[in-house]
Length: 511
Picture 1: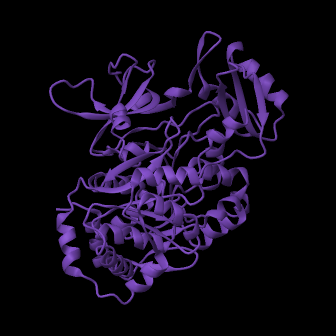
Picture 2: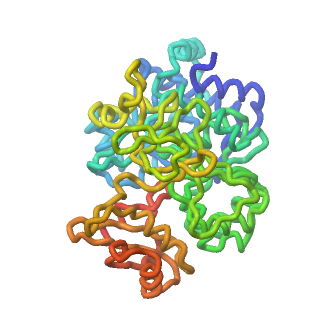
Picture 3: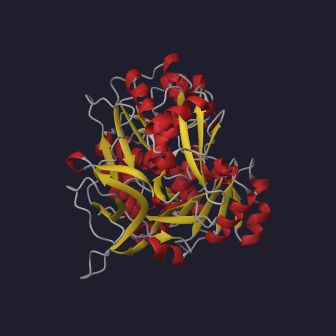
């Protein structure tokens, strides 16, 4: 019985031990080397860990980081990556929530975390020292095996932090079982095999990277960690994808839009890519059509799901023959196996998939659900709730706060966040509808609509060569007067957060 992700690693190590598992721009590691290094790290960590403790990582994604991940797991712990580029205040907030037994950092970032580590009572260790010692240490196989036997499938595997509406970050706790249930389904949908090279875009504190890491561990594929700075250098990025013969991309929508906006595919086309899974935002049709124009042999899959349901809960495999006009929206599809996804209306009534006129909140049930928010029972109980449709036994669902409706064949179409619906001039408005219309305009690359509550006005931000006057005229032709933005602001670049999504908090400051 497989009850933890180490079962996957050991099976793959037995079958493909000499195969490269992970590589970055500085080093590579085979599955055999990864397994041995991880056990060496675990042997050191177990001297200070009883089992079940949280170990925080404060350094950037790398092959070293992957070794550290599995070292913590072998030691019976739970890992959590902390973005080194975020403000000190947020880092402190996260560490106060986690209270990790150990923080592993590197020489580059050590000085930025010393005082915070002392304040929260965590022991600080350098990854350089840990790796050096792991090369010569006698691995304690007996204790490691004891830890393995003590791990149950509901034990927390990782904690990823997301933004909270109150300004306080939320640590989403995901178990071994949830990852092990999801990854085989995901691998099947993406058709990932041992022969693939997965091009990693996401930082390790973002759950998109979970799909990269564990899809490889499950199949024996190779993960290539793309340097972060290449996502602002289109020529370097395209050369990297082509030269490394990347075949699988699991990327945020904005990362793909960067390629099309900067004309990366016109410079050089990575013909080895057989499948692209995208998520995080609605894919603008004009950008999808550009991708499809150049990547003619690539399969595209629209993925949907918040961090709280372990990566993704629905997918839509886009038919090769389909063509989209600018006013279309790509469906988010149907549920993965062993996940229940349904819509509830504002009165908690179930919406029938045959009813395509109603919009409801996406709710999810199944093994995929996270264990909740770490050290935060109050916020956990607000969204991980009893299914209002079930009064015979306990069934917890996650209320996503995302609105959707059914389209043809029972597929779901994402509408917007529940909190992106605003009341303006007596009308209920979907800001996403304004964004969608704007994105259909020629020479508009990206568009985001915000509502300024204190001034009661709609503000539209966009990038592209189109003039504001032209946008205003087209919107007047397409939207009722009460939906016309009160202000239109042109940006040179759309601000992105560390996960590659458009950063609405930064945009809010520009209003």
